[in-house]
Image (cartoon, rainbow, N blue to C red; front, side, top):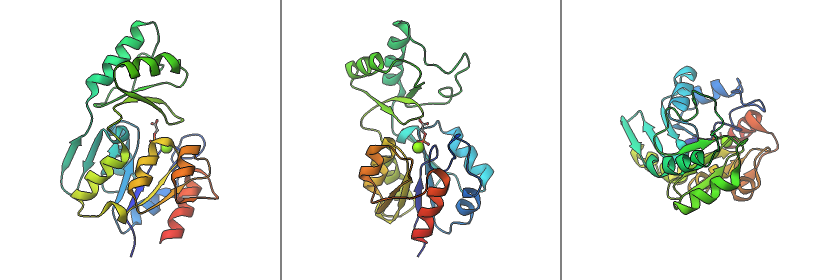
Amino acid sequence: MTPPLAVDIDGTLTDEDRAVYPPVLPVLREWDAPVVLATGKALPYPVALCEFAGVERTVVAENGGVAFVHATDDLLFLGDREAAQNVVDEYVETGHELGWGSHDLVNRWRETEVAVSREAPLEPLQRIAADHGLEVVDTGFAYHVKSPDVSKGRALEAVAERLDRDPTDFVAVGDSINDVSTFEVAGRSFAVANADEPARETADEVLDAAYGEGFLEAVERVR
Ligand SMILES: O=C(O)COP(=O)(O)O
Ligand SMILES: [Mg+2]
């Protein structure tokens, strides 16, 4: 029986240059069980990836702050951006920048958290976030200012319920600390070889291959 997948995007379906690794696309499209793309990026990014890949739009975005389930037409908001925006406003008032240029396409469509470039100073961001009861998660791609109550894992539980699946039916594949909660909820989890320490420690198995090749290795192990 083919298991449903909960798959991270950046660092897992991509190559080392953050571009989607083409061989993963037919695997996602032909997978004969639900595929949930679970990312720290804003909702339009995983939705567009599903559209262009021919995969049903079942996505977790913003580290679990937003989720969309095409099968039930549910759009879920599991986080509240205002608190994160207050942190970032204070951060900017103290003279720092988010680091995404004047149009900021990284945050333009976010609704429940705010992402800051890893080029920006982390310590003041962490201090201000803590003052507001929020956390900063470093995914290796960006610093995410978010509520500790929001996670990809909790969003996967909400999505699984709408798909009438048990979260432990899922196989999860990821590369970073923001995938740890997904690994804890899924029945079986894989960290790609390029994964950070928290992801490697939490995953059931660490793959030999990195990035998109790692994802392909994982699906071969579970087919
Ligand atoms: O956008 C990020 O920071 C990370 O994205 P990911 O969760 O798809 O790896
Ligand atoms: Mg990732």
